[in-house]
Amino acid sequence: MTDPRNQVVVVTGASSGIGAATALAFGRAGAKLVLAARRRDRLEAVAREIEALGTSAEALPVTADLSKLADIQALVAAAQARFGRVDVLFNNAGFGRLNWLEQLDPVQDIAAQLAVNVLGVIQTTRQVLPLMMAQRGGHIINMASVAGLVGTPTYSVYAAGKFAVRGFSEALRREAAPWGIRVSAIYPGGVPTEFAGHAGIKRKTRTTTPAWMRLTAEQVGEAVVGLVRRPRAELVIPWPFRFSAWVNQLWPGLVDWVTVRRFTLPERREELKQ
Image (tube, rainbow, N blue to C red; front, side, top):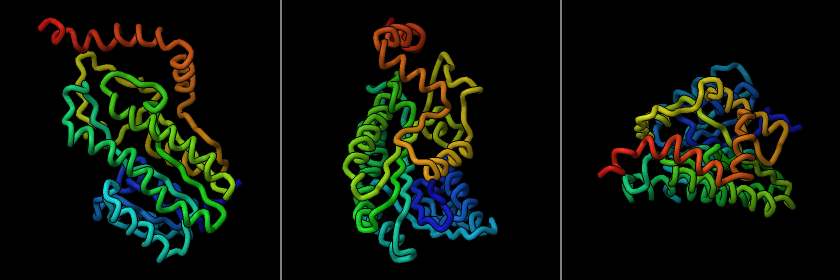
């Protein structure tokens, strides 16, 4: 077990949602936080909440756009200047644009999404990795999604990014192990956050994750802290999604048949008539 107390933890996408909830969870555990996101005012508000917890936690807000390498380099430099090390990196920053592929904007919806969700994860890890190698230890936790295990309609680009994070995490885990560096990927299902508001979801069938399978941002945050305490390669939450991934892997043709008939055709029937 690893005690998060006094660990230096970098959290990207820390201004709201899962990122903010995870930062607060680490704050309650007494960690030293480096908070990264584009919205400075929101970062400073989260930092104040952490420092008001009454634990040994500290919080350093750093404005950063994770699609820009210079911002990533400045973020890691700020963490090193303030704390001298990085023990945990939580690659959480990301967003989704959910629509039929031909209706996604090539730049704003596709290129921008992959720039943050994939390249941002890789580039941030690339900047932190030499520090952890020099320390002979560390933990990199990558935010994936159930969409990184099961590809569903309207999630084509988002799923592509999360499948990429899955492969990246697996390969890096095997690369970094000799230095005592752990790599984990977390695969949550639906979580009510700002994500849905930005994703542009438009569904005639109103299909969504059942309420009993939805998680709160706080539950995901506690799960991330739990990964630091008891590391594992992958964590799928809530547990029923493990069964969904298993079925998808064993019987992809069956999943295709059900998905197309229950979702794709009802959603696109009017377009098919044109």
